[in-house]
Length: 221
Figure 1 (cartoon, rainbow, N blue to C red):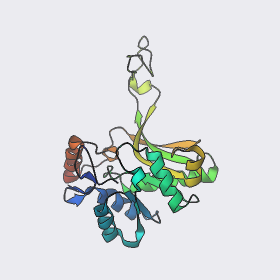
Figure 2 (cartoon, one colour):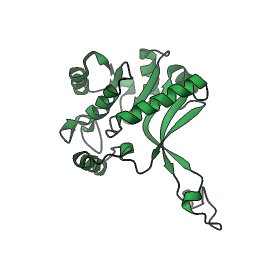
Figure 3 (tube, helix red, strand yellow):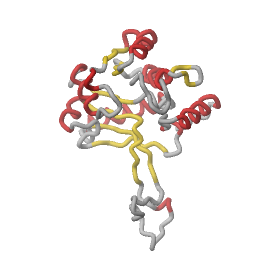
Figure 4 (cartoon, rainbow, N blue to C red):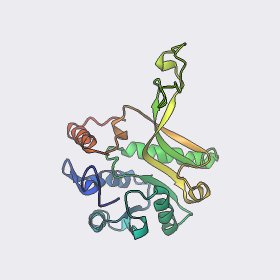
């Protein structure tokens, strides 16, 4: 988590309905009761202080080295740095402070899916997606998933998955083998495109929408 944010200044610690943004996802992960440690990579002393005060020994603050600071550093370099410190032998649930509406139930279900995949050796990672059944086109207006001459009903189209960046679950070994948090045999955790859980706060409009949902208590999976 960076201290700096371009579109929503101080986003990660800005109060969302009275609570710092990053507390939402961190509280959810703690309540899930399945993760042995919360690791926060940050360039902000204030984020580190707030996290340590709230989560005590359950959190480890990783101070982001100077060479990994900035808005254009590839996330893979940051993940690689953290796994090297935390240990390649571990499994990792990576998420973002900007997903405040992710539920405890979804976190537990996704971790169960990951563990089942490991036991069966059918998958080596899980990542969250939105399921789309709609007519899609590329930038040149070429149909991607349908034939306009046939015009199937949208419910009869093949599903397309949209990576929604809510979370990724993977092992340290898988990451170093692929240099990516999505492994060679991934399993999608499917969420509805209309789920409020998958809201990602990127700009002031997203912020206002998430705050409205929290105030109204209309979170849905």
